[in-house]
Length: 107
Image (cartoon, one colour):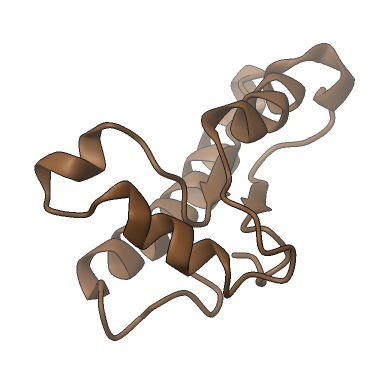
């Protein structure tokens, strides 16, 4: 999303776009019930599941070199964002999409 490899993974890009719109719509619908709805939109993160789709860890490292920070992201990078959005410190935030793309643009 936001400048990611749109020509290579159109299904991923369209799915992320759908989730963004769904998040905002569900947040509007749920706000009167006191329910907050937020999401984290990660960039390229290597997980063990990617190998099952033929995407090896080395290809993610190569992609990481194209990022502004030129580092490979990890799941721990997403944990902080997720915890923040779920915490009471973000009690006023709903319908937000937190972009975590290593300085490569966001949602």
